[in-house]
Length: 338
Image (cartoon, rainbow, N blue to C red; front, side):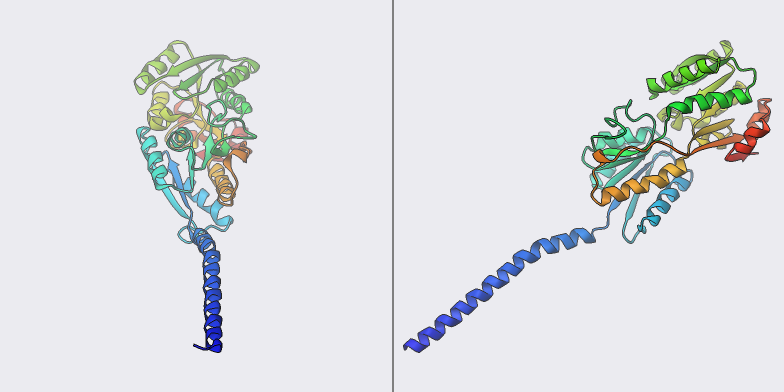
């Protein structure tokens, strides 16, 4: 081979090497871009732990979906929901939470006692509390301002709420001097302390009746009657969710006026409820989900305190108890059940 041929062959080989180098470089650049595109195309899945059934919790799920829609999320298109319903059975909380953790959903939305089940199931998946009672005292977060772990969201309880519950009871049960607090399993000491301070301010004597299990409910109501308690405050908890109807029925059986925090108790025959709007809480939970999906860390997102409270009154229950609801209270009620 002459010199000209060797030179041409060398030029061809160099050109081939340059092309191969260029192709390899492009492949290296394309790899992370393809991975990023795959991540961008991944539809996030949101697990939802609900205490009731699909029918009883439909309005709460709808409120959450509406909040997501307002932020640009359409279910089935750019977001997927994985709801799990416990149907009032506490023993299902842990199983449903563990299932969502195994599915490795992007965020878990939970309320009340189901938050603890979610915390027990995962310390990596972000958890949004849609309705938490005193999350600091329960050890769910370090503080409202800086939760400090994989949990953030919305609180349900406010120190002033206990005073409002007692004030409403006193407006309806005019002769009340002794008020009982049904301290169900899972209640915090802070709730009792807030209520005791409010009772003293209103000139009421407070009695605490501790309920450790369903079997003690009958005994507790009988004891309350024996001690001449005029009315009851019932705080939300896992036991209350599971035995909601039984608590309402026992109050009616013993002609005991009672106030609850959740309107579901009133819908099934309870006298009245006052508390943060659960519907609004679930609607607001979508904001936290959106921030987390966009990269925010739950530990850095402050927990939101309630700003809207709802009063629900059952006139049929009031009539059965021989009580007259003041017109001013009826006018201020968000819902009146007749």
